[in-house]
Length: 321
Image 1 (tube, one colour):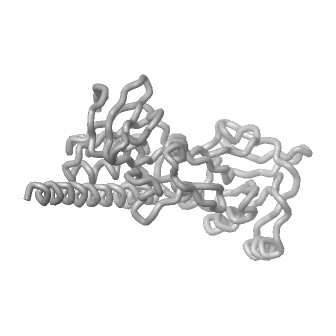
Image 2 (cartoon, rainbow, N blue to C red):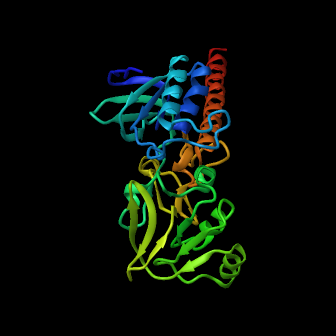
Image 3 (spheres, rainbow, N blue to C red):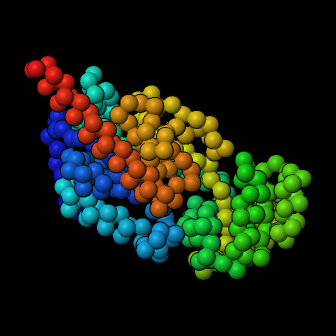
């Protein structure tokens, strides 16, 4: 799809910030609702390292890049505009909309905003993890567990969730080793669950991975020990890309994974006229959930705009009468 050029001050019903599953889904329903919509896409999908996405009904195993390309093709059919770029600022226009500034200095006007900017995974500072991320170093068993089932799993204990990930992945393999690394000792309840699952616990800090012929073969500890493993699950520290939302004054709430912007069931934030969806508002929004969140936001925005416009027409008619 070719990039659309915009003139300063161009007006839209809705500007969608972020062109992943959530943003494209919101744009699709808005386009079908005959809303003039612009999607601004920085091109930084969270699942970019993955060769396939799983768990999306009818799209299981699809290349994530192909999925996004198909989404852009679909929204274009309904007149939605898409541009590669980044929103650097959004501010109230003093009425009931927003002035949105894109990188390069372009500005557009939006009656409503949908922010779907996702999050950043902070990987454990272990040699080799970043290079193998999305290959044989994974984070989500629902996304990747079937593909690596019955192999020798390693799990780096999460600094917050402890043994939780190891307990979850034991559904996909009977051979699971939990590396405590720098995490706190397990609670009595976790120790009992780990024992019941047959999970081996290894103490000591992990220093790096052993990779042979472009595949993971082991986990190396600081004391020189190597534990043979074919797959490693590593939880991440999550940082939502919510700078645009917090700059607008959106309320955040604490979660076990840190603060995320608070939204209602439709994705409405505490800022009038601003919705958010996808990983920007929650850590567990897999692609199918993100798309659902975007859809809900799109329908809610369209409904609000319908009633807003009708109320204005009714008020104008009343004044004339």
